[in-house]
Length: 211
Image (cartoon, rainbow, N blue to C red; front, top):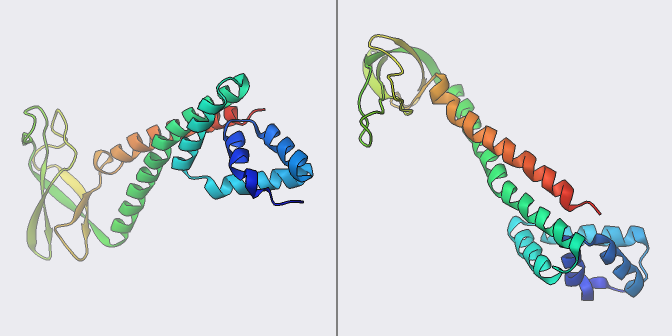
């Protein structure tokens, strides 16, 4: 079989345009490849260039080049939509996982204690209707304080309410409040959106690969 590198660019563009069968036939006709050899060569060629940015560029180019090919154009559009959902969904899933892993690492190097709410509401700097709680706690007979990172329209706690905390063993000022709002709210929102977008990405990837 002759070296197919002379038509590699054309082959990759055909694949990204959803015209894989044409790329296989081109390899068979010009280079005498068997169908199995052609499929393997296409997989290798696409793998070498399969980054999100390259996918977007090639898919856009394929869309404009083969716009008159109804089915190929439709598959390319599905591919672009899949890329759009993946562009947001995958990073959001990774961000949620990253926050979760960070918290696990933090907890593994921390001690769980009970703090006490000293101030149940304090208007934040940018909104009179959003409130934070000030929580005091003791480590080695020294008193420290921390402010809740998540604000709310109503106070999360009231004065003298007990609040579970994870305090860094090496730095008592480094604290993680053990509550749903502080630990799970962002993970839940970001992770749910990321999962939703990723599922949509998978759906449109499937549509883009249909012959």
